Image 1 (spheres, each protein chain N blue to C red):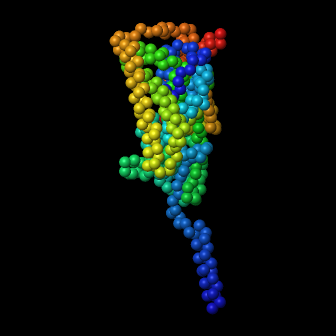
Image 2 (image 1 turned 60 degrees about the vertical axis):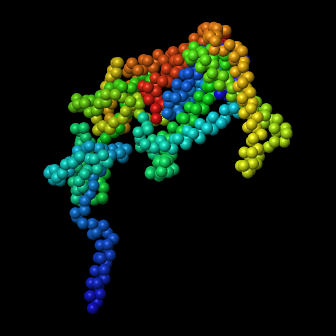
Image 3 (image 1 turned 90 degrees about the horizontal axis):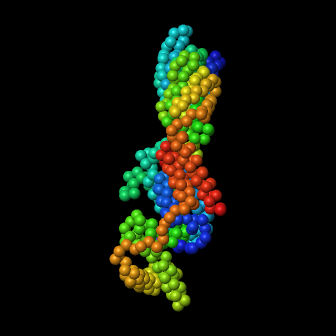
Length: 221
Length: 278
C-alpha cells in the first residue's frame, strides 16, 4: 500500500515538473528562426546564410527585408556562416534553443558626406565604393541627393557594408578618393569636389552678399 | 485694397525708385508662392522685416489693420491642411513621416468632406500657407506705405493699359477712404446713443440698418464724386503725359541686384536642392 502511495506521489511530481520545465514541454522538433542583425540591431538584408553540422551544409538561404531566414530550423547545435557582398560577416557555432536566434554580423554603417568646403552640398555626384581587398565595386550611386530632413542641407548617403577596407570615389566636375577601414560605424567627408550646381550657387550667394553690402554702404553715405 | 496708406517719410526705402520697390514686391510674391515648407519662409520673413525696419513701418498700426488677414490665413491654412493625407500630395518628405496620422478628424468614406486627418505634412503645409499669406500681406502693406499710389499707377501703366491700371488703383484706394467714412458714420450714430450689443440676432441685424444704409449712400456719393472729377480731367481722351520720369540711380540698381540675387538664390535652392519642397 505504502509502495503505491510513493509511486503515485512520484508520478504527480514528474507530471508537475513536466508542465513547468521547458525541456520536457518542448518537442525536439521545435522550429527556431534565424535573425541576422548588424552592430546597431538593424536587420541585415539579402545576406546568404549557410547552416551546417559536422562539415555538411544542411540548409542555405537568403535573409528577407526583416533580416529573417525564410525557413526555420529544428532545435540543435549548428555551424552558421553568413555572407554579404562576398564577405563572411559571421562564422561560428550556434546552439539554436530559443524561438529566435540572433546572429550579430560584422556589418557597419558607412555615411558619405559630400559638401564643397563643408558647406555647399554637391548633388548629382557619382559615388563608387570599391572593396580594396578584392578590387570589386560593392556599391555605387549615380546621383547623390540631399536626404529629407527639417534642418538637413547636406548631400549625403548611408550604406551598410561588411567589415573591411574600402575606397570611396566621388566624381563630379573633379573627383576625390577616400579610404576607410570599416571596423565600426563610420562617416567619411569629401570637401573638395565641385559641381556646376555648386559654382552657380556660389555665384548667386556672392552676388547677394556683395549687392547687399554695397547697398548698405550707399545708403549710409 | 490698401491696408496701410502712403506716408511721406525720409527713409531709405521711401527714397527708392518705385520700380525697385515693385521688383521687391514681385520677388516676395514669387518666393511666397514657391514654397510648401516653412524653413525658407523664415529667411523671406527676415528680409521683409529688414525692409520694414528700414522703411520705419508702424508695425502696431499694420497689425491693427491687417489682423483679420493674419487670423484668416491661420484658420484657412490649417483647415485646408486636414486634407493633406496622401503620399501623392508630397514631393520630398518620405510618406511614412509625412502621412503619419496624429489625429483622425473624419474617417474614410465620410460624405462630401472625405477623409481628413492631422498629419505631419499637413501641419507643415498649414504653417507654410499661414506664413505665405501673412508675408504677402505684410509686403503689400510695406509697398503701399512707402510708395505713393500715383507712382504705382505709373508703373502699372507701363505694364497694363492706362485705363485698366487706373481702375485697379482707384479700386485699391477706395477701401481706406470708405472705411474712414464708415467709421465717421459709426461715431456719429454712437453719439446719438446707437448700440449693437444685442444678443438677439434679429435685433442685432435691425440695429445695423442705422450704419448700413448711410454707408451705402456714402459709397454711392463717393463714386459719383470720383466719376465727376475724372470726367472733369478729361480721363480717357488720350494717354496722360507722365509727370515724373522713373530713372534708376545707383542705390536702386544695387537694391534690384540684391533682391534679384536673393530671389534667384532661394529659387535655385528650391529647384536644385529641393529646399522648401514638401
